Length: 73
Image (cartoon, rainbow, N blue to C red; front, side, top):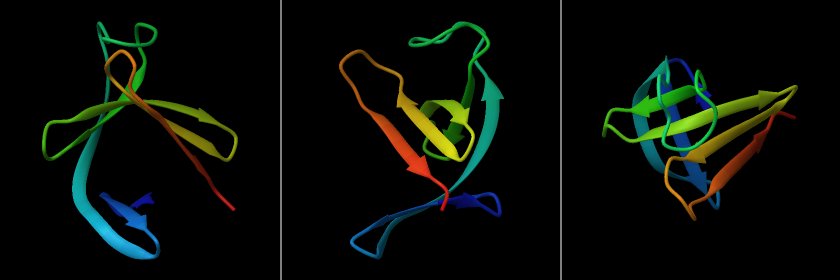
């Protein structure tokens, strides 16, 4: 869940991560097209962002990593 300038991650209805974030644009992304938006957490970790209607894809920025899909209901 992303909102109110905080990123909240839940597992089995339990809050496991709460951190602030900023949004930016990659000039030269490790993975994905140039100009791709990213979310950067307070830890310094960045994930690429792709939105498609009610879907949000957060893409880990390394080879053989994960893409996390969130869908608004």
